[in-house]
Structures are given as structure tokens and as C-alpha cells.
Length: 509
View 1: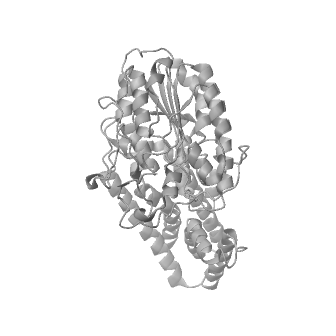
View 2: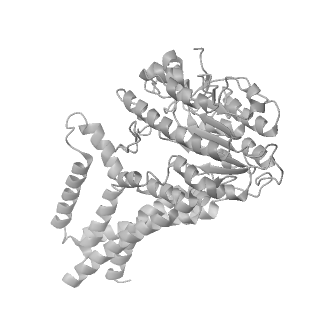
View 3: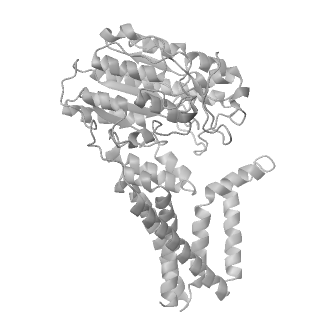
């Protein structure tokens, strides 16, 4: 192999390395979402390669045998581009207080200048150029081998046609009784919201009351974490408890619960009742392809999700997040696609997961888009309570509009408006759970829970947690009294350490 060929291969290898590494680390997720999910990753990689080869060709024309420096520049560029988020973290850690004017773009440009100067200074050092070529080929080759090994060892979960995976051909007990389960992430209940922010959300409850909704929140969420709240909803049981044997088990947590050989209990029973399941997803978890169809798939929602995770470490992460705001809009997916999916005439179960009330707070009280730090998903920082209230007000307006759309089409529908947990402005996750303040637990445990049900099911409505609400829904679908579980609230932490996978019963409050 000639020196020229090695340089070309090195440019291709290092340009493709981030994509190869990403696919190796996330192969199970990519396989679950399908080949189309990596379309834009391939496009961006092809652009990186094309730019590198164009500059190499120009260097060769300028001076025969030249272009050695291009390999080093390409290597440095790829490393700098995909280290942008790391640089942002380091800048925030070391300069946020001492030099707040020193922004991440400034630090990045400065670093590029330093690297470019070093490249020019050592442009004639043959050993350095050879090392760059060797490094490019080795890292890409190693990552490629790892990817091949991961693909060879990967065992896909059973397909959707597993027993109970498809809707039954039965007639639902009541015509037009679709089920819309709307999970508004981090939307606190009335008491918790007023306790922490001082905002009285009564007008929203009054408006929903006029539309037939009943407030059944206990203000004691079953769990303080999304993966457990959602897992419990779909499993119709507590996915983890204070029994140590359940610690760390992900069998019934979300989204792992959708990778089992049979559908989750809620979906299995809805299918048995003849319902077709749909999922309007969020940028956080994507759509659960197995056992549920995905609203928005034809509009590249899933592709955008995978692309954003690939480009999140780069300077393109934030602009893409901003520009894709409407493509991953869970409410918009329902409003625009519902007329299409209703044409088949089947009763529908639609699970809608909205992140608009969750940090980072992307919307003002008029639903105007704000520029925020996209990666700060746990940004419950003191002083941002007013931004949380603004986000809630925006959600309220959007909820009322969506509800009016749903009721206009199917007035007999079952509709759940529910939060998976409350806010966390006063939570001290890094401290032992035994030292958590009762007021902080009450803040996090507060959750929205408004239910609208057909008249013959309303007699069973009473204060209940998320899991029993799901049990109420399936009982109403089946036309019988719900079998409710004892109401419990479990504490869990996000922090690393001895209590990472531990669950404890919440104290009384």
C-alpha cells in the first residue's frame, strides 16, 4: 500500500470513527429502532469524509506528495468536534464563576487556534505525520472490530408477533371508547406546585372539570423516577419495591419492559380487548416500537432522536435540538396523525409522553421557544421556579387544546392526564435518603392525576397513584370493577453510591 493510499484510508477511517464507535456502544438501541434511524448519521459521516478528501486533494495539487498535514488536521478536527460537550463541562467547572464571560464557543475557538498552530509548527515532522496515520487506522479498525463483534453476538428480542403481541379481533364493549393516556413528565400536583412555587393552578383544574375530568391525585406518587413510574403503569404492578431482591432489576422498568417476549400487562390486556396501541414519543426515550406503533415515524421522529444523541457532544447538538423542536412534539403528533390512524376503525390506545414541563424549561408561558442548555435534564436549580411555572402554564394551554380535539372526535373516550413525579428544586439527591426533608419528598412525590371516564366507570374513581390509575383504565375497558393494589410510595435516588439501586418506603407526610 502506497503512502498516498494510507493517508486516504486514514482520513476515511478517522472520519467514520465516531459513527462506528456510536453504533458499537448503542447497537441494541439502533437495532430496535431499525436501519432508517441511522440515516442521518451516515449522511453526516459522509460529509466529514468528503470534506477531508477534498482538502487532501487540494493539498496534493498544491504540492505533489503533499497532504501529510491534512491527516493530522482531520484527526484534530474530529477529536475537537466530538469533544465540544466535554469542553463545555470543563469550562463550566473551572471558569463559570471566575470568568463568566469566557463562553464555550470562545474556549473552543481558542483550542482550535492552539492545535492549528501546533500543526503548522510541526508540519515537516515526518514521525508525527506517520503517527497520526497509524492512530487513525488503529482506532477505526479497533472500533470496527468491536462493532462486528457486537453485531455477531447481539440477540434481538422476539418479534412483535409473540403471543399477545397483536390486537385481538373482538368488538369493544362500547363504541368510540378510545383510551388516551397522557403522561406529562414532571408535572406536579396542585398542592406540590403551590408549595414550591406559590402558583395556584386551580383555574386549570376548573377548566378540566368543566370537560368532565376528576382530580384523583393522592399527592403521593408511587415512585420518584420516570423509569419506575412508567414501568409500573405498563406492568400494572410495582416494578421494584423495598425487597432487596428487586433492587437493580430492570425487568419491569421502562423502556426495558418492552423488550420482553410478551407485551407488558397493560398492552396485553388492551390488545385482548381489541385495542390497537400507539405511542407518541419524547426526545428522552424515543418510541417503544415493540407492541406499539409509533406516531410520527413517517416524519423521521425516530431518526431525529438517534441523530441528536450522536451529535449531542458536538457544536451541532444544540442547533439541531432547537430546529427539531416540532418533529418530536408529542401533542402535535397526536393532533395531526390521529385522523389518519382512526380511518382503520379500530379502538385506539394512545400513550402520549410530553416533556414540556421538565427541565430544561424550553417554553415561556405563551409557549414561545427559548434557547436553553439541552443537556441539563436535571436542571432543578434554585431561582428557576418561575421558569417551571411558565412551562406549566404553557402545558396547560396545550392540554386544553388537545383535550378539545380528542373530545370533539371521541366524546366517550377514557382520558388520563398524569405526571410521573413532581419537581425537585429542594431535593438533595447526593445525601442519604434517611436525611431527606419531608417537604422535599412531598415536592417530588406530588403529581398531576386527572381522569375522564365514561359514566358507568366514574363510580370507581377515587384518589389513586399511577399504577392503580392504569388498573382503573383497563378495568373500565373490560367493564368491571378495578382490582386496586395498596397505595405505596418508594424513595429512590439518582446519585451514585451505596444507595444507587436501593428503594425505601417513603415516610408519612
